[in-house]
Image (cartoon, rainbow over all chains, first blue to last red; front, side):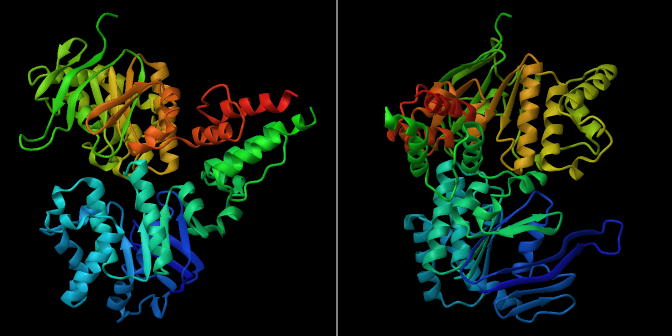
Length: 290
Length: 279
């Protein structure tokens, strides 16, 4: 689904001493099928932004479009239910929201609320747990008997069982060990491709933004500070440092090689192995003539 | 200095009798004035170790000694004075309505004199770079600032050991940097040992020593350099190696005989420079 923000502002507690403008005339477009990373510090407006995507918040001014659904200030959207059926949000620490007696019931809760027939729910549940790699033997267990990592997968399965077209991920790997992080990120990437989803990833990890996203939006103090393809964004190291953001480690290293060794080297998306070959060629170059 | 260390002697622990062992026959020592990073996959027993160290839990088997004194229900208050702890969630560890009250809370629990408390509040907030925030409300601070106040509260009691249980995990990169700088400064300025429990590999490279947990057992104890030389085995137990180690491995494969396992950018750059300049 195409998504667009057109001069969207959002103010918390307007006309009170606590008034706070969290989004300030934010405009950008996300094309259907793209994978967008939203980056910014705590308080930059990321959470406020994603809550507009499924209508949990309504803009104070401006307009949000998600496919055919429009969210405008002071205008009730009667289609909110439909919108929420199609935009799945995986909130931070989603396992804190588990509540049912069994894993299967927890996964079924969302689709049941939206009146999905029982047989279809079964089918979706099986598909969801397959994607998240939860063993079917666990379906009748209490979600609270599972490990933290498994609980997170159950919570994610519940979102997938809604069959969303847009997937919003708010720091989905926080607190997981490195292996668990990679598994979850690879899984979302697979789903994104297989189901042609539009994916929006909120993250602090420049490494993940570089590895998975095809577009990056950087928020700073409620405004869009930069947006572009990852390699373009990360060329602007100084602009990022100005708002205390880093470039991915591989790019930091390539820059240091160039500056300290005085050689030509550019990061264009090489794998670590490719980079190693290039570096070897560069530093051994002279010896060819020995 | 005598007996200043934390010692785990054949410690086993499980939460309930019919549950599997979370720790199995774990023995190690944390020495005076060192920084030990503890890593391991989720559920490997790291946080349980932290809770055993300051008497939030007690083992079914084996014993834990802090400066030679066994950790038991009757020594726990002495122990907690020596072993401070900072937890993961910055929002779950505040009790005071102002930063100053909050730092005072731990000291009040230990019955310290008012004059000393005032002195310690100033001193410990200075150590974490939060002086001037005495009258601020903790919940209005940023995540990094909250965790720095939490560290100040622990420092105020003047512990010998500080455990940081994934204290940077919920922070953004800015907050994470703040905490790492604070930790380094505090550790170099004071006579104390640090135990950091973490998934952050860059954090691990800065520690003096690493203890790797796997399925409730110690999988390895050594320096960060020794650890990251074991790339394949680390991946097998659900961990990873930092970017520099990965690139160093690939460089070796590509035919560049590096002389040592580099731990950071500078070390690897120096190696590359050596090859580049010798013709």
